[in-house]
Picture 1 (spheres, helix red, strand yellow):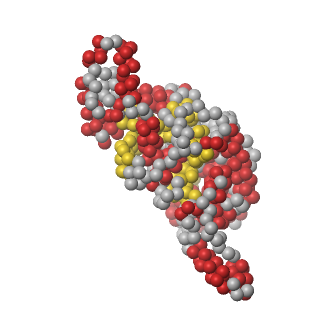
Picture 2 (cartoon, helix red, strand yellow):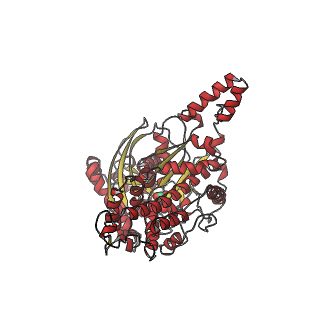
Length: 566
Ligand code: BGC
C-alpha cells in the first residue's frame, strides 16, 4: 500500500496541467521570435538556406550519411520522381570512445571509412570505374565533376550554417563531446577525410535530421498540402519548419534563392527555456541536469527525449528505493511475492549506474496492460537487473514511467502547437465548411423547426466524428520521426490532448493537424537537399574551375588534360 501511494506521489510530480501547457506555448512563441531576430538566445532558430520543399517529382541517385545518435548510417537513395524512392543502407554503431575523442579527425576518419566500405559493397561498379578513370586521366580531379556522388550530410547537432554545404558546430549534444570540433566546419572535416581516401564523393549539403524529415515528408506526403514542420522525438528532440523570409530579421550571410519568400529554419528547440522560466523542474530533473556533461543546456530535450527519459526514471526509482518505508523491489520473504521467490536487485543492476537504464522500458511499461504485468516484469529483470519483481513493484514502475512519458509527450505537443500558432498556418486555407454545431445547438434548432439547418449540422457532426470533415486544403501537415513517437503507445494522443488545451488551436484546430511518420526521413531528406544543392552548382563549375587551375600551372600541362565530352 505504501508503495502504491508513493508511486502516485512521485507520478504527480510529473503532472503537466493544461495551464502549464498554455504557459509553455506562450514562452515558446516568444523565444521563436527572439531567435529570429538575433543570435545568442536560448532557441537558435538557425536559417538553413533551404528555401523550398520538394513536391515528389524529384529524381536521381544520391548518397546520404547520418550522424546524430547511437548509429552512423550510410545510404544511397534513388529518387524515382513519383513520390517513391529506393533506399539501400548500412548502419554501424558509433564506438563510444569516438563520441568523446581527443580530436575531430578520429571521428571523421571513421565516418569516411564507412562511406568507402558502403561504396565498395553497394556501388562497386561505379566505384571501380572512378578509380580506373582516376588512373587514366591526369587532371588533378582525375574525372569529371558529374561522375562524383553528391552526398547529403545529416549532422544532427546545432550548427551555425553559413551555406548549403558549410556550417560550424555550435555545441555537441546527446552525449557527444569532442571540444576540438566546436567552431569548425563539419562538412570540411568530412570532405578532408573523404579526399584522403580518394573517394568520388562531394559533400554537397549539410542537413539537420529535422530538416531532412521535413523534406522527406514533403516528398512522400499524400495530397498537395505542403509540410510545415519536421520534428524528431528520438534520442534527441528538435524541429525545423518553413518560415517566411520576412520574419527572419537577423542577418543571413550565405547565398540562397529569394524567390520562394520562405526558408526552412532549424529551431534547435532542445534548448528552449534553458532558464527554466516555465519548464517543470522536479528534483529528478535537477539531479539529471547537475550530473550531465552539459548542465543548464538542452533543458527542454532533457525532459523529452529518449536519451534522458530512462535516466529520469532511474533517478526517481532510486529515490523511492532509498526510503525505508517504501518497499520497492523489496519482499520480506518469498510468500510476499506471487512468484514465490524473493525480489533481488542484482549487483550489476543498471539502477546503480548513471545513463544505464534504456528508455525502451517506458514503452514496455505502457504497453503491458495484462493482469500479471508479466512482460514488464521480464523487462524489469533484463533492463533494470531486478529479479522476481512483484506485481506491486511493476505497477509502481508503470505508474512513474507513464507520468514521465506523458509529460514528455505533452511538452512535445506544446512545441508543435507553438510552431503552428507562430506560423499562422491555421488561418490559411480555413474553408467555409461550417464547424460542427454542439449537440445542444442542434436540439435548439430542432425545437425551433430549423430542420434543414439541424440536418446539415448533424451530418457535419457525424462526418467530424468519423474524422472526414477536414478538407485537404485545411490540413496542416507535420512529419515526425524518432523512437518515442514511433514506439511509445499513445504518444501522439498525449501530444494532441496538449494541443487541444491551447485556445488558439482547440479541438477544431487539432483535427486539422495531420501528423505522419517520415521513417528514415533524414536519409531521404538529405538526398533531396543534395539534389537541390547540385542544381544550384553552376553546370560549368568543373570546366571553369579547371581552366582557372590550368592558367596557374601554365600552357604545357594543358596538353596532358583529357577533357571528356559530356
Ligand atoms: C540536436 C538537434 C537534433 C536533435 C534530434 C538534438 O540534440 O541538438 O540538432 O535535431 O537532437 O536528433
